[in-house]
Structures are given as C-alpha cells and as structure tokens.
Image 1 (cartoon, rainbow, N blue to C red):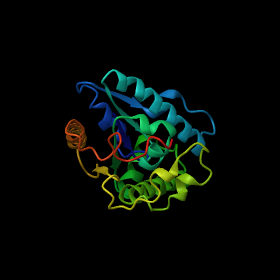
Image 2 (image 1 turned 45 degrees about the vertical axis):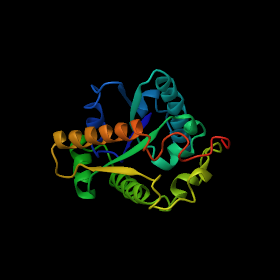
Image 3 (image 1 turned 90 degrees about the horizontal axis):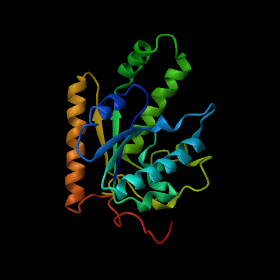
Image 4 (image 1 turned 180 degrees about the vertical axis):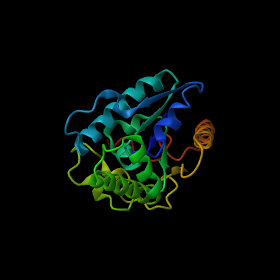
Length: 213
C-alpha cells in the first residue's frame, strides 16, 4: 500500500514522516531520493511519481507499506498509469498556516529564498488545501502541460463529497513536532485498519476500472 504525505515546503512533512520509520512493515522514502535534475518541472514530477509507484509495487509484493513524502498531490498519484496496480492508496496533506510557513522559510534558510519564491511556496500550499478538499479546485494547475501518460479521467468527474476523495490533513501550525508525529501515526494506524477490514476508499477495485489503464 502507498501512503503519501504531501505538502508545500516547510510544512513539517519530512520531519513527521521520518519519525514513523520504526513502524512495523513500513518503509519511509523521500520523493527526491531519486535525484532532482536542474529544471525539474511538472512533467518530471509526474513521471517520477509513476517511477515511485512502480517501486512501491515491489514493496507491496513483499507485504510492506510505503510512506512517501513529497510534492505529489492525490490527483497526480491517482492519474499515474500504474496506480491501479496498488492494493491501496491513502493521502495525507501536512499543512501550516501561511504566516508560520513564511517564518519557517526565513529561519531554515536565511537569505536563500527570494520574496517571489516564498510567495510561490505559499501559493502552492493554498492550492494544495483546495485540492485536498475538492478535486474540482483548479485542476488545471496539474493537468495543463502534464505528462501525456496521465489518466485524469479516473477522477476528474468526482466532487469533494465523493468518499473516494479522502485526503487527511495534519495541521502543524503552532504545534510541537511530537504532536504532529502523533497525528500522523494515528492516521497510519487508521488507514491500515481500514485496509485490513476492506474499508479503504482507495483500495484495489474500489476506485478505478483496472480494465481501462
């Protein structure tokens, strides 16, 4: 099973995700482990998401779940060609309010990010919030100029109240790291319990026609 932990920069997703590395039958990976080339763009991210899904399938064959932290929103994950081969998918957005994100960016890498770059991170965070709540929120942000192999038709008729569109949100605003880690661990336990009981909304056979890849 693939559990994705997405979020704009300085949300705290990597810190929380790596704190879950000791859970049984779970491995944690960072999306950028595959290497980020100069000029990495939307198509690169989508093709790389497909590459990660293929790697997850190898873990799946061994009965191991993968917690993958990165920038890929749920819509991109579901649209990747091999996503229908996963036995389960669950998505979490780790978020923080705009003011605190800005302050974290300035503290983490003083002088590294221009004002425009920080505004871009904030804009991506706002888009992710909208996307997590409703797949109809500005889908062109990921579909325009996309990798040609993406299968947007798998979900582009869904609405925000569709039970398959389930994105859990962990808000790290003014919270201790330990609290965010506890929230993420609780989400993982809930996802695994739902999977074991056959109740995972994005379980195999529940969300896409595997005959139409």
